[in-house]
Image (cartoon, helix red, strand yellow):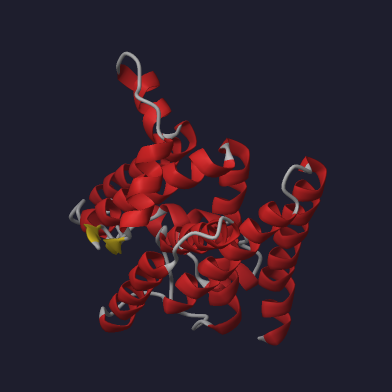
Length: 250
């Protein structure tokens, strides 16, 4: 296993990414986009920008900018299940672009760079972006249904675990070795259990949604319309669970 930002990365994933990547020509942003994927880099840029915004907000509120979670913007955008039930639905998505401190941000962005680039190459930009946001919704759904309604949650880990779930489905469909990925998942689950403050519900929900989204793409391979219908249907179900079922249950 190879050390990575959220535990360890399977060697098979590294080799698959290296074999599928073309040598970039030239330099600059275009070269980086070819190597890592423009969608992946754009998602990283949005996460970094949101950290800067929350850090500035914390400073304006009279707090240490490093403690960006102590800011008005962070409070406005993090996922509070009780506030989502009250109609503040945007928190389901915006929370996945917030991070508690720079260390949290760096770890998640390194993981996104590795796994995001691999899946973006395998699925294409649009399908990868759809899987990413469905993973966010999957994690948010689990938190809405089973989490503490008064405890705020934030972080890109819901989407990152969705990427792992999607990668697992792709490996199965290609009949490739899963042992490295399974080991990686076990290590990261242990980290989630042992380290306080980590939303296990968000991780599980994101993983399941990412696997389901990848399953739709694999089963409907070559049929763009069927893939679109399947992904939209999955998103609709997740939104209904978040905005209707969770509200009624409380």
